[in-house]
Length: 127
Image (cartoon, rainbow, N blue to C red; front, top):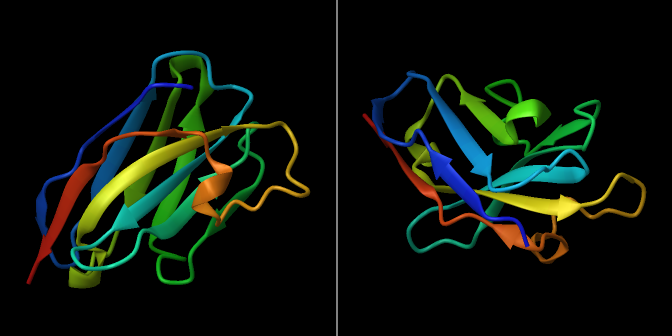
């Protein structure tokens, strides 16, 4: 399993922006990478995913048009740019990795599809 460490979470006002980072302990150029979040009292929720080449991205409907996932394979890092933040975006954000160079058959919105998880970084959106 890959060790993943998130950073960048903090308190931000409604309408503000944050950029989260997730650094891997080893090469992740053959991994699909995703961001998930969990708000207090709620189930973990899929946010965004990017394939190993960065050519395919998918987002939860709740963040489409506001969040952008990207990756830098040379730095073994995945990012989540979050704009127009809302109070409902308040959650612990975690990154996850699944080793695959295929997209067909990969259920990217299923948490059980990922074998590596970070511990998360807290994002609080204040009104």
